[in-house]
Image (cartoon, rainbow, N blue to C red):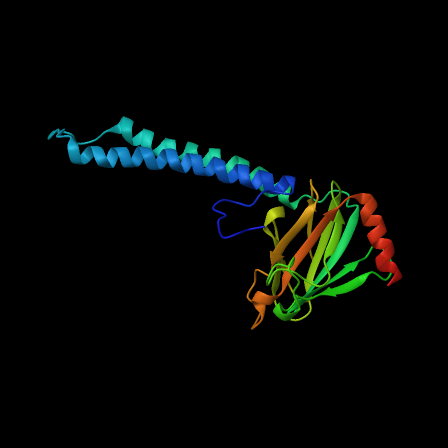
Length: 229
């Protein structure tokens, strides 16, 4: 979960988020090298007294500063394209969850099981317990098993929404009349928080997302208990 002191990305809970973090660090290191080089060259202009009044052209240096940026862009583009295809890949899902965005709450349907659907509202401040997070906790959390492929089918009932959990590296638009699909895998247990990331009206800030990653055995028990309700 992001806190006030979080300066970098949150700790990843999925392989996709790990790859996104690696790509960020890779691009940032290249940017740092470029910044240091250009800064050194600009600073040296103020302190040296080199001049050559007969210099008209420099074919060699022009080739270097044309080819070198192209090579740097290739080093950024190749891992970026690889990750782009990894993000869109959908493996055989173990669990499918349908998510429907409303103004201003989320509805979830476990389509692999009969009669498991519920709404998820933010807990108001006057109903919170000491262990709740203000503006982040909900009355009904979604639960998924870890180390399992999860397919999320997202749509909306009224306006545009965006289902987002930063720790998973997941962000997908909820569009009325359209089903969007995303796949992810959680590699550890925990409680992960997110929020709607598309301005959807007056209470846009008050429709959080809470996901519990639990063991497959606990997930089966949870499904059994939900089906009894």
